[in-house]
Image (tube, rainbow, N blue to C red):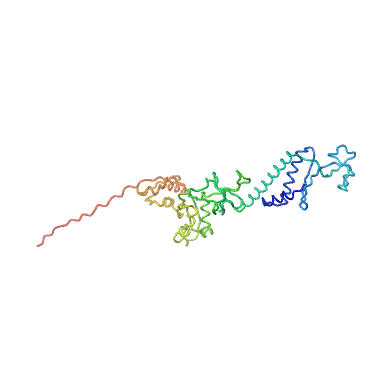
Length: 355
């Protein structure tokens, strides 16, 4: 059987190793012959030099020969192997036919083996890149998400992993977090991407801000409400470096590329505080807080003026929710007492008599 054209086509189409494909095709054909002749022992060899596949059947060297299908005479056996002896087995070329059903079986096995080789290659290529940012090109948009091309591999960005502000168009490049590499494809895709996780934002900080990459500034905590706002706690490992200013950059030069990547999502960068009360007050920015009381390990009471309440709560309650997640506390807002107005000084004009 001349398999040169079949294997060369697969090498061209799939980019797989020719030797590996030869072995796969042999496994498929072996399954076909075993299906047709279940009582015989076969092996299938592929000669890469000639492109020929050889189907061999195992026969017992015996005298006399009672079953031509499974036995062979010593004379014939020594034409194949000069050292053959009675009672041994030799592999003999097999010329028996196989039908359409057996060929279908061979195709199924070959297709399955090729998928396994391809999935193993994708797994080995991308597994070490999990939780890092990768650059790809938007290939097509589907109902459940977006297909992104990473080199020769098609990865999937589910809608659930996309932020509301993400504007995706076919042909445009995009940065995503490589969230997970599956051992085998699920719904045609093996590499799953993400743009809404805290890890995605943290990786963007490491890419855009050298001090974060070099660990001179450390990100201690990140919480996100994708498309609305993120809050990030940072701390400096160098007393001469201001962690917040370093992350923002002169005129916002460092934070702006991250904001553009997130489609306008706001980011509050907060310094790590020694005091939990101060950390809670900072976490509720942009609201101005008057006083914080840590009630217990789970609760904090926060006093603020009435005009600051809406800022502390934020759109749809997102700001206070993020602050609670950031500090691991249930933050309860308390209204500060109205400031007592100072009585105006009364100036009494005394008429003085002119003498």
